[in-house]
Image 1 (spheres, protein in one colour):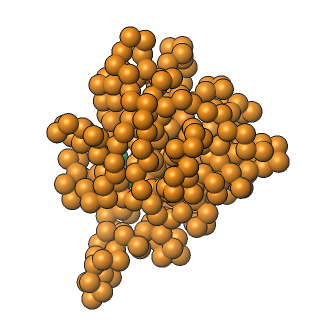
Image 2: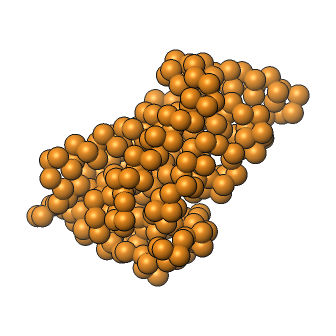
Length: 283
Ligand SMILES: N[C@@H](CCC(=O)N[C@@H](CS)C(=O)NCC(=O)O)C(=O)O
């Protein structure tokens, strides 16, 4: 059984980390049975989430998790895509992870009001006399990371303009297609879903959110989700709640038709080990 180490649902999202959401969507797309554990950060091999444990093997980083799933379970999330499409998918993925992500972090952690509505909950278990000191230390660390990346050196208006351009690129490429490369989801949809969902998170006031909300197709895309709508997915889960909420916000132009994938089959490489068909939603 695979264990996915997560932060657990927060901010109205299945997980506050888009990287964790991406990894979880990939597991769901592959039709693999897995459980989640929210107590793994201290033991994380690279100090970050997500990572997985699979038969005693630990794999850290959402991209390495994807490659592990593909190799071990005979899955090709980009099945059917040309080399040019795969290259485009990779570029969009890294646009989300190495650029858009930092604009999302900046909005959540630097703005006091956003911080109070969001990341502050991570510190709720710290004894109250210590809490302000720990919060100040970790926020300083995040600010330093933002400066080291480079985005933290820009003004709010500049960050907003950069983030909006990235979001516009996603919206333009998606256009009227149900998924990034057409009628069926591929690997990039796990990433795009996760980062657009994070940008649309309704509890924060952020340029990323404003930019994403301007695009009806992105709002509908997140509401449509990568998630098959078979009855077994309907179990009470943060994913189901989240998708139901996003669907309600769908636009009249995209009235929530839900393309389906059959768990475990679509991405299996011909002749490879089949990913399991039985899918359990961890609660
Ligand atoms: N490249 C990594 C990035 C993972 C990452 O940045 N995770 C963040 C949450 S979004 C984290 O665990 N931060 C905790 C920390 O830095 O202490 C991936 O693709 O998984």
